[in-house]
Structure formats: C-alpha cells, structure tokens
Length: 345
Ligand SMILES: Cc1cc2nc3c(=O)[nH]c(=O)nc-3n(C[C@H](O)[C@H](O)[C@H](O)COP(=O)(O)O)c2cc1C
Image 1: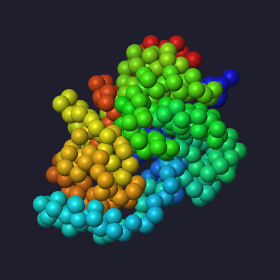
Image 2: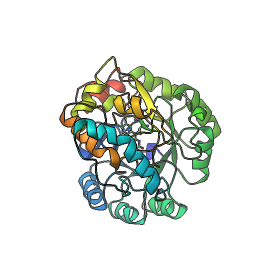
Image 3: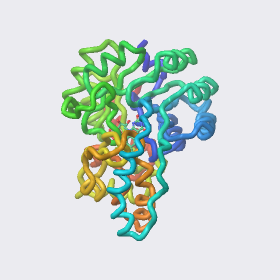
Image 4: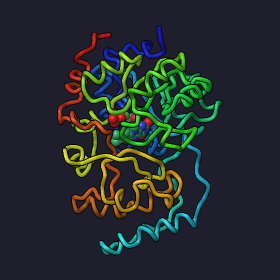
C-alpha cells in the first residue's frame, strides 16, 4: 500500500489548497465527492486555524496546507521605496496609502500552529516553499498525518525525499498561484509539467502528485500515464460555487482574452496570475519588491479601492495557464467529469 492509498480516496484527485480563494466549504465538498479536499491555512491566524480544523474534523480526509518560508529580515528602506513607487496610484484615486507595516500577512508554520494540528490530527498536512524544521516535521508525522510538499525541480524533489516528505507534488510551470520553489529562485530552472513529472518520478522513490495546468479528463489521464499517483487541481475548480473567489477574480477567470504571467509584485515571491495593470506597470517581476510576504500590505488599499470600482487592476488574480474548463458547476460534478477516464479506486 502506498502512502496515498492509505487515504482510500475514490479518485486520485487532490484539490489544490488555494489561500484567499476558498475555505472549508470547498474542501469538504471535494472530500465528500471522493477527492482529497485542501484547506489553505497559510493566511489564517491561530484562532481561525483552530476553527477551520474543527469544522472539517471527522468528515473524511482533508489536506491542511501551510507555508514554510523563512521569515524576512526587517527592511524599512525597501518598504519605503516600494511605498514611493505605489504613491502615484494612490494619488490617482485620491486615497491615502495604508500606514507603513512590516507585519507579515502570511506566517510560516511554527510550533503554535503545530500544536493546533496535533489537537485536530488531520489526515494530510502539506507545505509550500519546502518543509519546516525537522522537529516540526517529526511532530506532524507523530500525529499520524501524511506530509506532502511541492518540488519545482528534480533537486527539490530529492531534497524533500531526504528531509522526510511522504509524497512529493511536482509543480509544472503552468500552475496558478505561488511557485513552490525553495532551493533556488532561478525561474529558468523550472519546467512545464510534461517535462518535470517523468524526471521527478525517475529520480525519487516516493509517490508523486502532478500539478499545474491539469484541467480536463485527458490531462488527468496523461499525468497518471507519466507516472503520477494522483493529480492536484486548482484553477479548474475555482469557478465552482463552493469556492469563495472574489467577483473581479471570477470575471477574469472567465475572460477568454486574458493571459497569465509570473509576477512577484503582489507578495514578493513569484506566482502565476492573470495579467493586470499592477503586473504590467510594476513588474511582472520587479527588483524593487520587498521580500515575501512584506510586499502585500502596501497594496491593500489600492486593491480594495479598485475592487470597489469592480476592477481587478491591483488584485492578485491567481490562475494557471489552463482556464479552458473553469466551469460554474458544483464541485462534485466537476470532479466526476475530471475523473471521467479513470477507474474508481
Ligand atoms: C488561487 C490560487 C491560490 C493558491 N494558493 C495556494 C496555497 O495557499 N498553497 C499552496 O500550496 N498552493 C497554492 N496554489 C498553487 C496550487 O497548489 C497548485 O500548484 C496550482 O493550483 C496547480 O495549477 P492549476 O491551478 O493550473 O491547477 C494556489 C493556486 C491558485 C490558483
């Protein structure tokens, strides 16, 4: 029995945890439909994490997802420069910029979050941006959870295998949201899924989950044929009513003319989203951006003001390259369709 088959899923389909775009409603609906629901915890305060885990407890397996980035050093002069770059956009709307803040909007997984995980004992815990320190990985495993993390290169997959992951998620360049890299920030090392996946499968002996641009039954089948034991799907589930995608984001997802690119302007780390004004005029990749996640707070008023005018010009519109089948149907129906070429497990 492999690590993933322990979960006894009907379909080898994981729902990508998507911070800012969903909560436990989507996760529980996916698990009820026979996939593995994903609960993003990277932006939750401890109390909210406790409540979210209580809400999913006892309702089938769920994957709780954390960030494991290194906390940035304070960088007042970089933040000041970033705020100066954003000043003309505030003036244009006649709004005040938010007060300077070096409080991160996303916390890395730590001992306090781990204590909450230990209390609720979810079936799966996944990490983005590597793994937390060894002691924390051991504590998570000791409460019975499978540990997953993302690799964007073969070197990262080997590193995760050597540092205690049970399953590696191979993230192709097509993927929406943050790139999961943690060994090198050289994006030219990262490959599309069809090139990355067979290399990762060959390089490690752990089960591999494929993610990035998978959005139809053929894509699911192809990833399994290339050696993945399961797929992880994000963008193709974003328009399901159980997700909580904001209106400007939903509209952009359904705009056939829109294209995606990788940008660091919204958080300080590269992530794929639908190209908008902030990406065009400040990036898409900027050297002026403060380190992850400090860039985000300086943009919050611009984002809110534009969204109140029904514009996503300053919002992170995370999406993968394949938006063709982002359908507004219940997630159970979308999952059943995506699994259409598979045998029930
Ligand atoms: C809106 C959105 C938010 C995301 N947030 C997270 C997150 O919080 N944690 C994480 O590990 N991955 C996150 N991702 C990345 C996914 O785990 C996954 O790599 C990606 O969705 C796969 O590509 P696809 O969107 O083309 O299916 C996010 C992706 C999207 C689209």
